[in-house]
Image (cartoon, rainbow, N blue to C red; front, side):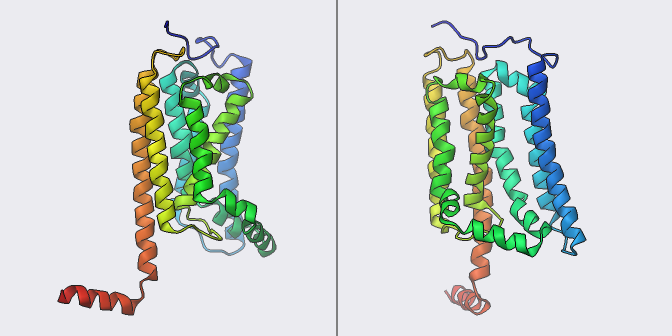
Length: 281
């Protein structure tokens, strides 16, 4: 089957195209707005006399917004429009790396510190509703992140969606939101009204790794068929190995978090008995 172009538009499309300029401006406004809102929340918390949050939270959030801006506006975004490999790089960044950084920024904590106690109590009541608890359950979050991804990349038949003027940007929003829900469900540092046990969170991480790998391998296997772009093999390899790197980072953070949580639960007396038992063994 002859190679088919990944993008239906002109490869020479540039910033002089009003539609491209409008998309870049919209993406820039969204990411800059998120960065400014976070900084404003920090300023509001300081004016209320609340202690400054850890610097690493701010670094994580601002890095996430900067990375999101870099891949949704400008040269990288246009490269993704003409290259399946470029698109896959954007997918990995928007769906895995950016959500992880945003979640590590602890935005809910920043919000709660910035607003009056009355609004904070309202947020806490809303977070405890059954619908939101179901939404942020690890299994739900995993399904929202992996099922659309599998449908999109299984055989490439819905790749055209990303070039739609409305559905394309919405697909990017889905990558970020579903990725953030998943990251919050398994390693979120913001308050969680009913965090799932570690074994459930570990299980969904393993399943998501398996699904991501299966889809990447299948995409590699069907390269050259179904009118897929000529660089489908390269895109599948990037999806497989790039996904492994992002998942490895997620696993390290998860294990470190479980290690700290276990240490907090271990009482000093119990720890002393364990140490004595281990020493006498």
